[in-house]
Amino acid sequence: MSDSISITTGNDLAADVGSTGTTTRTDYAITPDLRPYADAVLAMDPVSDVPPPYEFPEGHSWPAPRSTSLPEAQRREVQAKLAALPLEQREAKDAEFTADAIRSMGPAIRIKTGVGASATPFHREMVGIAREVSDLDADFNRLQSELETVVRYDASVDSATGEAIATPVYAVTDTRAEAYVAQQKDILRQIRLLVNDGGYGLEGRRRMDTALHESAMARKQLHEQMEDHAEAKVRAVHNEREKRINERADSLARLTRNGL
Image (cartoon, rainbow, N blue to C red; front, side, top):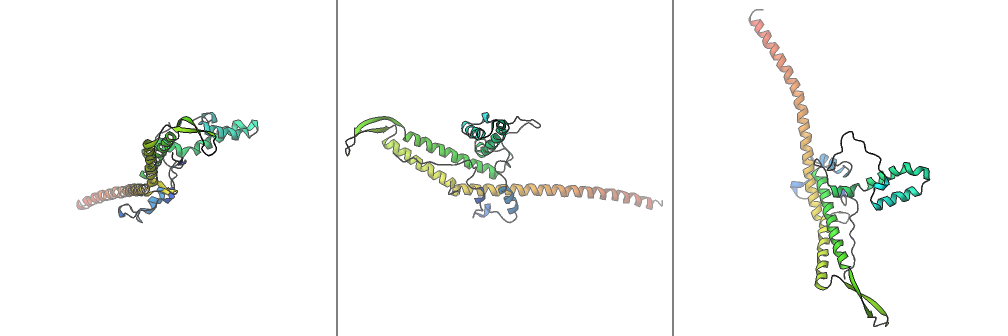
């Protein structure tokens, strides 16, 4: 049997957002004209600054969250904090501690729910990679659980001590177990391509660099469109004034020609 290997993806959407740099491929390089827009994207909080895939009704008020609505693990943490407070303070603090717990769950929730339609390609890719890693992690742990499943214990005798021992008989053995271990190794390889050493792996970095370039380009184009619109409004006012002046000038010219 193989040793148990634990993969921890944590609650972060990405291993390290700030570690995303520019790629050596010139088509995805962040050129000086794109740098301000890329920096603006990198400065966004991946949870609070990125729209979710759902919208709350405008003007709708929601009741204060209660610890009873939390998942079991978070509920126990909040209730432990409340238990340390005087009885008369617990009611007021319940909503505060619950809100803090919900905020801490934000990244994990975002990985499951995804992002809104207006999210940047950078943040969409960030969530996509985090979800892939989470799914790979689940596959690894599922295989590990099957490898560690014992169907029965056979009695035997330790040849060195003469003591009776119980020898586990695993559900997955021989070539099937070897195949499972090979799958786990491939899963680890795929994870390392996406995230590695607190940052992105080769594949993850390539995808994030591409998405960052695309996001910066989109922001630049939007900025230019807004500038063009503002300039067009200024020119429209100017052109309208010019039109009035020209019409007045034409009228005065006609009066002059008619000797008036």
